[in-house]
Structure formats: structure tokens, C-alpha cells
Length: 468
Image (tube, rainbow, N blue to C red; front, side, top):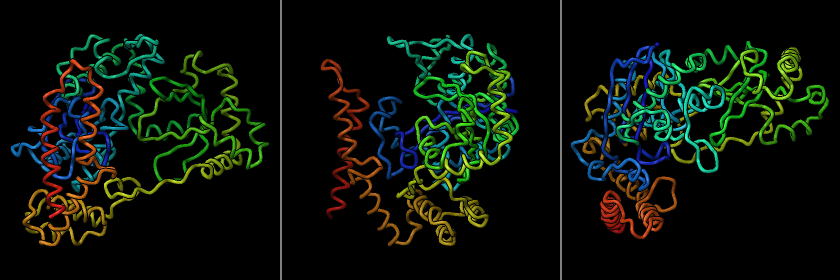
């Protein structure tokens, strides 16, 4: 199986509203030898305001982000989708990618009318090298070197981890450089701890995770919270009734005789505690899981492997208790809050085959005919995102009333100080905060000075439009 190491640079951290402006990826063979690399940038969408901290970190000047010689975001995503599809099947890896880069990529693909879950379909796998690094430090500390803060806590930022392990970094917070660093880090762990690497690769497959959880009577789950690893011996009790890829497992350190005697109310109170005795494992996020018999004795706690295996066997045979635990756990959770913005409505709603076919046709059709395709789509999200794409790329192909609506909506989004998308006024406030936190003898970087001028001018133009 090939690997794809990738990274993104974005205008901020808010998935659905912020935008990828730099994407880079390296494809390797199973031995992590490079086969091919790919890199592309884009200019800003008209309705996106970058967060000042993002520009300060990446060093991207606003002049580059609005340069019309750069590909548009839609053009960039057309190229990204085509390249990643051509590299499939592969295992897609990044650093802190499952929670950030993968999500940014999914939202970007969806909002440009591409299949959002590309890295999970086509026999692809995915995993997060941050989890691998944390597991290596917690389970096999000789595998990597980790710098420590003054208080003794480990630092797992990619740049510091690279420096601690002698990995040369050409440019931190550059998508291609970060992809290279992630690849080099994996090479070190593969060399120093091949067993951990093999498990990491194995559980990059959702199917492999599902099979392991459902067939292994007991296993060790390693979870990361605030850069610390926590190890819990667990056993599978059932699938999460809610849609998704969740598997529910119970902490084997519990006394199951006492657990079975609890009333529903008492059980509800127990399962409402934090941390919850039931762990929900996502099968498509590369969890760190180890058979009890393979885990180091020091990670299993006070009970020992024999007692844990006995408890795992007990819960495996008690279908009534497992069913009751799943039912009470499901009823004890807070209801899912439905998103209010269309930009956030990605997960949990699947496209029809007909709409997927219309989306593919959209990309092949000349711009003057694309609005007609958009009008036939059943899904309101696709209709809106498709209309916006035409508005951004070829607004003359839209009816005048649609252009007028989107002009006003874009201006109101940029002017609204309290909504979720970054507004021009809030952006100026953030620049001011950055200025106030700098030492008196440290001038503001030229990047932020130039950005402030751009935002100030654009705010004046938006105000004039709304008032006119």
C-alpha cells in the first residue's frame, strides 16, 4: 500500500468558513521512499477574511492571497481532487490531520462539489502521525526524542519534535515542508519501533479497526488528552446506535457484579461522569489499540492481565448487560446540536446518486450552462455552493437577481461583527490585540501592517456598498 503525506495552510481554524490556500502532498511506497510530490496554492474567495494570526504564522502576505495570477480556490480543489484520486488507494497521513487538515479538506471538497470523503473511500485508509508520535513517546519512548517545557511536560509541536529528532526543517508552517517533516518522523519511528509502526498502518483501515474491536475480547485503548497518554483496558459492548463509525467499549477496571446490580438511574449517573466508563471509538480515525497480551504490564494498571482477561470474557458473554449499557449510555448523551449555517452542514447527510452524478456533470459543463444543472439538484447545500462557485468564477452567467442577492449576502457576511465567519471589523480587532501583546520594542510585522491596510480599505468599500 502506498502512503500520502499531506499538509494544508489555511486562512484560519474554522472549518466550513476558513479556506485552504496552500496544499502539499508527497506519495511514497510502502517503504516510505518518495514516488511523487504535488503542491498548489490558491487566492482568496471573495467572502473569506483571513485570521491575522494565520497570516503571522504562515508568513503569507495579503498581496499573494489576492493575486489573480494564483489559481482560484475552485481551480485548486479541482487539481487536488484529481491528484488524490489518481493516488488512490493509499493511506493518507498528516500531523494533527484527523481533527484539522482532513476536516478542512473534506469541507473544501464538498463546497466545490467534489466527494467529501475521498480519503476514506476508494480503498483508502487514513491516520494521524500526531497520534503515532504520542503513542511512541508513551509506549516505546526510545522511538523518538521529545523536548520538555520547564514544567516537564512534553512538547509535540511538529517543529520542536523535528528539532529534537535531528530532522532538518526548511520552513516551518509551509505545507510542503511540514509534509516532508511528517514523512521523516515516520521513517524514524518505523526504523526504531517497527511493531508500533505496523499497528499504526494496520489500524489506518476502518475495516481492520472494526474487525479487531469486535473479535478481540479485551484490549488496551490509548487516548491522548492535552499531549498526555491515558491507557484504559476495555472490551467491546456494541455499536453506537447513532449514525457514524462509533464502537462502544466498557472500562474493564469496573466491578461488573456491582455494575449489573445498579438501577437505571444509578447507571445513568455513572455513565454521565467524566471520564465516562464507556469509551466511544471511531473506527475511521486510526485509534491506538493493543491486544492485552501484547501490552506492557506497566500500562495495564493494578489488576494484571489475568484478571482483565477474565472480566473481558465475563462481559463478552453477558448480552443483557451489554445491551443495557449501550441503551443507557445512548440516552445519557447530550443531543446533537444541529448547525445553523449551511457551511457547517456536511456530516450525517448523504448525497443521492442522482445529485452526485449532477455534481460530476457540473465540472464538465461550460460555465454558461452550469446554473441550469444547479437548479436540478435536490440537495439545498449543493444548490447553494454550486451557485456560489458560479458567482465567484463566472458571475455573468447568473441571473441578475441572483448576483444581486449574493453581492449583498457577501457584503453582510463581511460586515457582521458577531457571526461565525471572520468579519472585517473583528479582523481589525484581532490585529489590534496582536499589536498590544507585542513588546514595545517589537514593531508589527510588515505582513500584518499590509494586511491591516487591505482590511481597512475593504471595510470602507463594503460599508459604502451596504449604505448605498
